[in-house]
Image 1: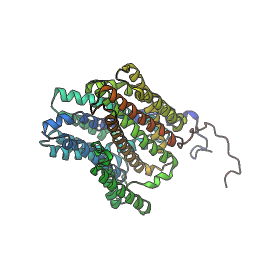
Image 2 (image 1 turned 60 degrees about the vertical axis):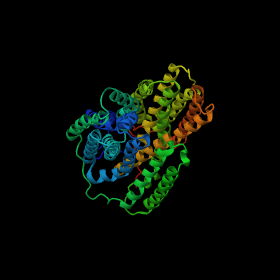
Image 3 (image 1 turned 180 degrees about the vertical axis):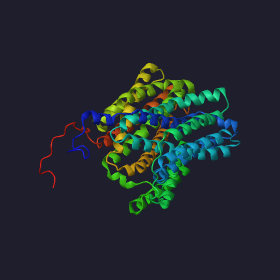
Image 4 (image 1 turned 120 degrees about the vertical axis):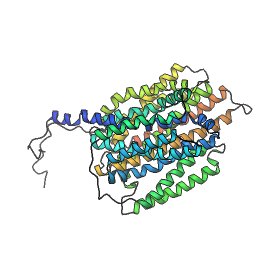
Length: 497
């Protein structure tokens, strides 16, 4: 097939150059990552400060935990709105808005004078934080094109994989050395720098003034439905677990609202706020299922591992954070290769290999003892980190295959919602399993290192099961990507009619 302009097929070097990560694209990725760092670190930084905030405001844990729950609910509720907002106002405008909202929320949180004001300002912070990641992904996918998604996503994935490790370390250092207010104030200079860089470095995009009108009914059903599900899952830490009244009521309400939204989304003539019709694409469906199951295992394991080191091995929060560092090291090692391999041979073989590596890395934690070698556990965590990168990063490349450019913002919102639900569900389920196992193995109502170890062993088997379950949607991913030929074979004369 000939080129319309030259009458000749493009050469191999020209095709290779079009696939290369040019300096402009890399610079755009760095600018966006700087903006996303504060949001990615915020949740894990605040998690280590909950106990200190409880003492500061002279309130109980059940009240102060709303500083985290309120942020998470706002984050979940705003994500479905992001796709429409990007189409209507432009990705650059929404990027600047999300950074500004996050900066303002952070500054106000740092100045909070009561637990009520802190919770309210965390909600504002969550509105900005919820938009940051999907808007960043939309900008990058549009700029990179289908042939370079894997490599650019490998670059921007680094902060996300480092945040569970770096966040607790930074939060612990701030709490121990300066005022708790700086766990929020630290976001202000980062966001200010990110805004300046974005103003100069993020290209203006064409605003679609004729974009479909906002699906108000869909938003009124979906956002409260997601918030109810997330809230219900966050309350499973109660002694009654999933049987607690707030949990049952919230999950039931969320399920009804989501079912009503699904019926509406499949009937409405306007573009729904979460386009369920995207699931007609096999690669998108498989990728979102992987995101959900992967979120369950990754976020669930990141809850269990520091607890094991603190409760069984009697390590401090800082020491537990340091002992989790091998996971980030393994992830960074894998990210240097995963993106290129994904763009070269496709997502499916990389994801299947990553799942197998993740299962191998989890095995040692199903056999932990109070005196298990830290070196063995660190090596397993390193392997597990490699598996995370190999199984999760290529999914983004697969998710956008076959989608029209106009569908990218809606697809990004859907992926973010499903991944958030998977992480929340995995964390809630595994915390309940662990709690039940601790009660079961307690000797006379008291837990010792041996009984705690048995509880963690059983719970880690569930993590391994969630990880292995991702093999099912992984098999639905597209097969090996066909490479473009530099000199395509001439078409038969009768090929076109």
